Length: 394
Image 1 (cartoon, rainbow, N blue to C red):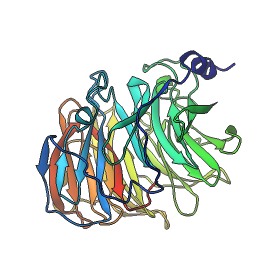
Image 2 (cartoon, rainbow, N blue to C red):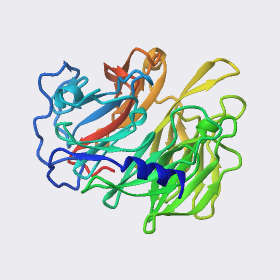
Image 3 (cartoon, one colour):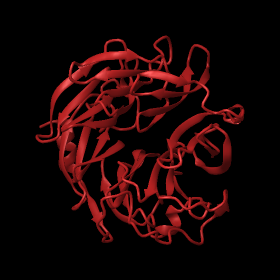
Image 4 (cartoon, rainbow, N blue to C red):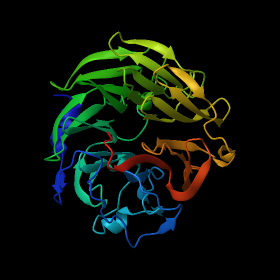
């Protein structure tokens, strides 16, 4: 029996079901429910009617501080609501938890991965009320597909350890909200992408430095077994992963923080080869159709500083089309760009500034031309978005 299955047997994948939820196949219900009241709120822009009702923003919180928090921007009202989770869920001990690492609305539920609290919170998209908690060790990212959500997990404790076990992907049924299967992958797996009936998993090996992992695990979703591995010889310490309309993988590596720099790679998963090295460093990226928005705060132990950059990429042509996506000079006040997202209708884009990691961050909203529309104080280390509305969005 593998280490991960031994761990599963010991914790029994505890799930607590609290509330029923109505079925839906889009981002959230087609009715625009009253979402948030009696919470810290700020009018940040004029009300605008749009099929995107707004978005949730998951703030990570500094590791070990138990300060993960959830904000909500109501686009119809033009109002930004801060730190809504505790108000919506007053009986939850320790509130949202330690390090909010990923957020996704899939079907009629919202999934918040809380890394160092070893859990995935399942919430209602209309009110952010807890439906369930699914316990998953050192969980990292979530990907919904085919009636399941898949959660990557480091499995072992959150610490540097050359003997740390292989990571895993947990398969969670979206109806029963229980773990129904697991499969071992590479070391310290991160983001995932689905192409056809295969789940691709970016492995980092982040606990094994300087011997980082340089493999993408390939899982057959029908059998839920690893059927292949894609090794990228020229890169390591993988993090971000997405796919384009042609089924190519877009892989972001962190590098080793010394001479092996962060970079963006285009991978043909069938031929298992790199089609192009984009020479674009990546901290976070967001695909809007076949346009990829990228931000980077690339740390170097050689210089002892972060190299800040932005990019917009034509994924179809595999070409960088803009290295200066912010046109009005606002980038000069952004200290540490950490997260990015794009409104699927208006094409406004959002940049999160984590600043020093230990103070409240700032969320910047830019129009599609790169000019600042508004900015708002967010939680500590703002990072992960989930849009809500009458828009199919996975």
